[in-house]
Length: 374
Image 1 (cartoon, rainbow, N blue to C red):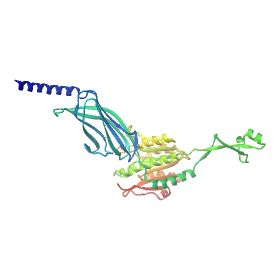
Image 2: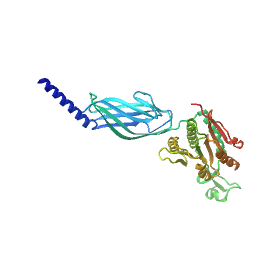
Image 3: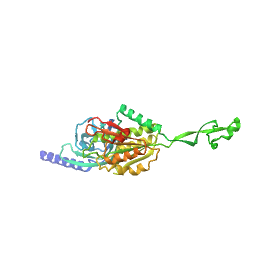
Image 4: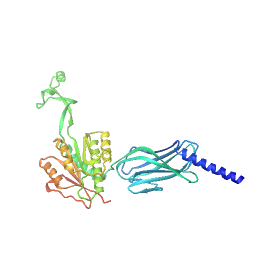
């Protein structure tokens, strides 16, 4: 009789346990994922914090937290994970009543991009592993990984060459609202610039000297149209890095920069264009746009895509093309620009498969940019 009572009691406890776990296992249970930074640069090391909080009396001895991220996150601890088109994480933990656990998961940002984690799944088992139940936790965490810097020595040589041309051709205008000093009147001075008050004090004609402003801006046209049926990810990514480095370089020199491309936004799927601007916020905007380029989408033909914006360019705008695509339509466009006497540069990223193959009249405008083999 005692044995039967004990067995009955054990059965009741087992059923009660099952009832409690089925009904309350995910009550007051929360799962959060957070990046240590909102943005990073290719090659940076960040931390993804995985936080599980259990605010109840019921312990959770066997809990699995599963989520998916980009395969371009190289986690330093690859245990409990698999990598295919994405990175799949499956962490096993045990959390007691009223406990909070936080795991720092360090990873390297292997490539630029715009990354989102939308949800995490939690699988719970009881202490006897007699059942499994799943809950999904919605979340919305985002990370910008900006294009990495290009080779410093190579970039310095190219940038100084372009910058020298830009500054030489700079179109300078006096700004009547930017007063600098007063000097003696010269015969070539406009009578409107005479400072009559200063002239009366000194007994000789004096004129106002104004500071100068530059109407010139740099427009960077980034082409990711494929040269062949083969996809050259190394050339695409290096082209994006060059665009980022050039934009930052000119803006840091006080020269407004714009970016136009036939690449598509991973969020809106629209073509990405950034009008001229300056300042650190503009550098950030350009890098965010470059991070959001989705090279897996179909890229429209470059020349029709940028023709309208190019036509709107003024004579004072300095144009830079970045394109490993070298087909006839682009070369005809650039030859027509060269025929007008307008200055521009064409940076051509190349590798062992893609080499420079341009018309002779374009040679003075071409800057080859060799990309190391992967």
